[in-house]
Image 1 (cartoon, rainbow, N blue to C red):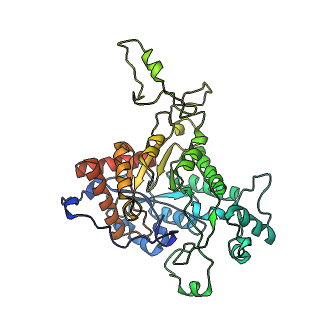
Image 2: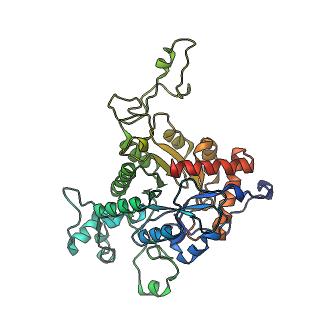
Length: 428
């Protein structure tokens, strides 16, 4: 997520500069189908009517907060894809063009309280509202300016949101969960003033930063983790894929997700066990000889608990973790890529990249190292833009070209691969 909601900077209005020699000159093969794995066009509702005329075949549209859940649902009712066997290219503008996603972004996680807890942080009183925000924000706002907490929304029960999201997922059988995640860098914007209100852009969906200065307050990581975990479990229960945000929290993000699949890991033979296979016998294990013979991935063997380890989770009914996970605008190092790709991991992990996050914010070298490390069938592209239309197409084309160059793919071959990957992520 970027642009008017960013904690640090705005999305660029132009593509980052690149040496002319780096840019392939051949025509871009839109006819093969280009799929945006993560975007936010409902932040600029006036752009929605242009979606059917875009060159991109489909957009995976996120929701993030109170103000956009119904908007994403409404747009899905007009432009939603209803069949996993979508035509490529689109036969007509009337065909569906979006996959809706329903979730709550970590930047807004402070607005929830866990009503299932034995000691909820909010009981509906003004004093408990102040107490709630003192517990979930750091530093405690009341120690500096109690009016900051007073200006925030009344906390909502988490269970209410989860029930609403489940209903939306039932309404849209192809919908995903997202955007969810963890963010250590984000700080809440300062409170709205009369001047801010008078100057705000009415064309933007409310709830964003919109140029306000940042406060010193961050959301406690333990609270973010609780909100994330609840949504991961909902995705598992519904057998839906999920789009995950992670900023300066790659370790705790992995631990939070991995905790849910503990006991469900795929059976991975050790090096010793592999040596015991009779000489000349066929061994169908996909275990690599490079893997360490250790227990760095706890529970990497099926402990005989009968939980279906090693199978596709959504083929077996509800599980406590999502069957497919996209780490959107992935900014972690190669070592984190390898963690998620360990053969014991029972979920299918995808890694998505965007110009606005992975190149425009100075992370080019790290992104390109990660792209080289990600398997060809696990990589996705996204715009992460907040307005649909021509600019979104431009950013998608640019990220596709860059990834194809880094991977050494022929452009048409690469676009076909990326399309297959998107369909694998969304539809399974």
